[in-house]
Length: 368
Ligand code: SF4
Image (tube, rainbow, N blue to C red):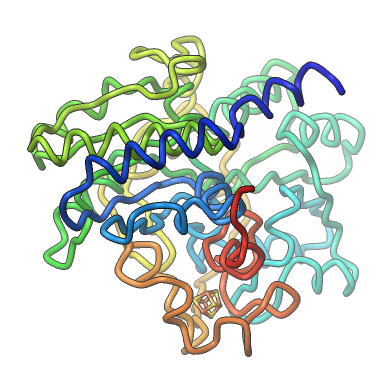
């Protein structure tokens, strides 16, 4: 048994889990709805059956925290158009390959001859650009604040190396504007947020204080193991039951209030806030991070004129309502029938961080 798995296991201790569940049950006196905005947390909740251990007054809804799921269809189609160009080697994280665009997915394009490579980091794509000077290398830069520093580093690295054949197709988003959008919706049901621990490890949690104040809502920075998640839920319920609303950190082993300032500076050097479409939700003002003017040379959208994109979502997919916490995957008529992980109709069933995928894989799990 190695030390890392021992360390992880200590956050899955069933006796401690039971103790936290008992305390949550003891203090819960009424119905509460809380949302996690992280696909990794959604998966852990479903994998360990934490939702089934909680008192029935607590409803967990799953927010737009899966990077693959929120990447808008027009940007996916744009990626497909660029990947189809003969001079391009298109690099992407593996999860994006099976995400359906309006017509096809990247796997299908690769089978038809497009040069598409799975990479684990945008810096791998920069290396491919060095090794293939006669090709244009495009990295599909999707994701939240967690992946943005590496995307920024790849642009800085390409610039330092003088590479003219590297660019990124940008579809990066940030969490706080999505929280604003959810909380200001007339249909909102969310009464507390579990903030994603890895996002906060980069950005800190200083940005969340005004949100907690404005909407009078508890926000608890939460990790990914069963004990982390139950601790986050317990602290949220404590605040809700006392009618309190502030930002609390339940993931102190990884997160500080100010976050990783080197990473934040790298982000700010290369990117700036911009409006961005979220798949299933629509346009959220200032929710994206686009390339600054000084780095526009590395913008694949500008480099490749892929023309007007007309998108077509699958008509039965209710991913947008799921991502806003209005519905659960079980409410989708296609769930587990027309739509399953081998034949996904929407991004939340494709991605390993998608809520529909988590429900399909783990809906019968409980921790033992
Ligand atoms: S089950 Fe499939 S079709 Fe239904 S919301 Fe999820 S991804 Fe969309």
